[in-house]
Length: 532
Image 1: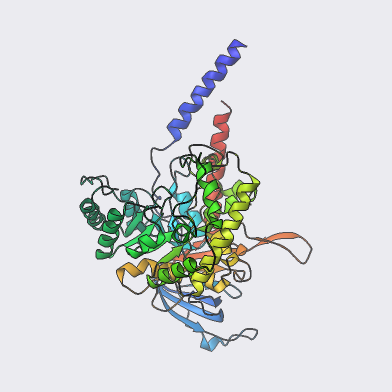
Image 2: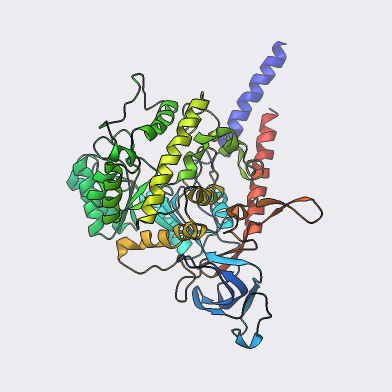
């Protein structure tokens, strides 16, 4: 017995050593690009039905001509149900895609992206390929990683040196290995100095918290002066002094999540009435209690309507990222999603499981009471977003995947479904996921959008899928949608077929296969270690 125990201890120690040796010290940048064909001198997509991202109805058949990385023309070549007049079609291309019966949309814009971490997904190739496989051609990193990592990957993606979406780098104040100017959280002058430093480093915008009013004012004002964007997660620790309307009045460009929104229109409180044993550092308290805000506001009441009106006047964008908290409504469903077994890394899965330390893994004692509170919270939240959109407000799509059972790419498609649940027409959902994201990113620059629509002159960022996404957004998931065929057999349909970024054609199915192989490799490695 003693020999067996000693052997077991030795094997356990060996396992720890092997894991430590195998584990990188930081997330790995994307490898040199080995995927994708193009860009081509002349790429022609034939016979597609196009959903152009503007909110207009689908039309087709059309032929789309791409020269280099720009859309040259979008030409109607006939009418549904009748043969195409070949004489009307654009001349042949160097490369052609037969898209008869397929749908073409602008590439999707994920406005809340992180590139993984050492403890979850240390190889960014895994994350990038999941995004591209789901049609995401642009991400706003908040932050994608460190300032140096984000700006380097941004440049490499812009040059198409890596297989990745185009990257907009938003960073938290104070980041930068060679920043020696002090803490921007304590002194407005230092805050302004850091913004100018970040601009010179190639940062596109700021990821803010609920900072002290004088610090928040300095950061936002200096960002505006330097044509940089701003987005804020107005955390509960500071929201009592900096809620959504406070930040919007200072010029905040985007609110991410819901933090600060409900606090801006409480009926009978100035701060959330937390339980007396509340501890924010206990994430079960933090996330279990925040949903109780649903009962603290009055839909369509005076404060509700005034807030909605003023936020629209201030032109603030809502980036709700509803998918990242959706597990709170039904954790069992999120935990058992179709894609986890094939596409979720074991390290990512370990991060998801209940843990008092891992952020977002707060399922210590999740109850029916908690899930009911989240369901009610979503009803109120969705109502505000729906009315905001109807009144002329801009709503975008973000995922924040890598936490709370939400996986990169898959979480983004769930966001589309949640906007539809909130009442958005599918065409409004597509617009939120394309044009509205592009508008939000370009607004600080004061320039016209470069992507976000299928229009001549714009960048060739496109998504091609064989099924109609307006009829069922589930066809955009990498796992597709379940149907029964003519033989009464269960089958899966859909999944993005091609993602085109900057005129380069990526086989989305092959990208998913690459991810599947990465997961299999990780599972084999972990399985071998577990033998010890």
